[in-house]
Image (cartoon, helix red, strand yellow):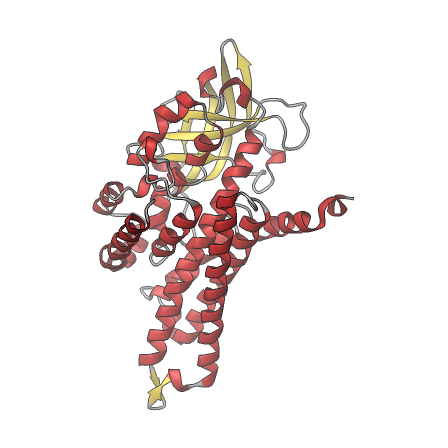
Length: 385
């Protein structure tokens, strides 16, 4: 995207987030729902397809451009970003990374416009960050496949029009091998969605279990066609790597908001007849959070640059996601501390962000999984001896 065009997009998103969404944050948290007018505005702004190539109706942002946009989205409730996060991220990238030309042509324009919402069906009750224990199966049946199993905590599944389902297609293959990805439309017989999960935070971002009971799909539903059979884990890994850069940027955006909330509170809150900003221990909390935010931002910018260049598409995204998800937790904790008792009260932004931030250390690979990826990249074969 041209520099001036990107500046215009960033300015429009910043204005939208701060003038239209921020005033609704408490309502979104209480009602567990994004207002319909906000959803429609996101579609009109192209937010459902900012990573999808322009040839399919998206904005076609590079990773370096994407993280700048996500910094702006992180200023408000992460439920906003979640509306279109799966279309741009792990679900949409299943098609971008492994789809056939026909699959891309049919589905990517619908994802980019927001006509269709996609979900990423990988996680199971006993298979989270490690897909090797995945138990959902798909067996050949005539000229199609029959899928059985269930998925857990699937983002946007209550409103999804299509789910990218990962299933074991070769039960004899070891570990992560023998897994394929299937494009399963919502109306397919045998597919059902459980009730919405009641989470600690991120209200307005819906997740639920997905059940597949003798779900029959044609051969054309395999992502990548016949060449995609037993190749699902490779697709998942590449999608998750991109998603980790995205989540890291979101955490940086949230940290920026938390620093702002902390600074403004410290400037205006008085104790003993003077602003608490004059207290050096409060200054120390602020300084640590400013430093954390700046370090996270610099790491994400460099990680996105390397991702675009293809020089680091594994360890860098893991390091950025690991550091930034832990970082925003620290910044949120300090923000509550600076606010004192007020920071523990519902209706105060830092209390909500404190709850919202906790999830980032878990999804798209826990912090512990990121440690393993980073260490194995650094140590090489010695880590597997």
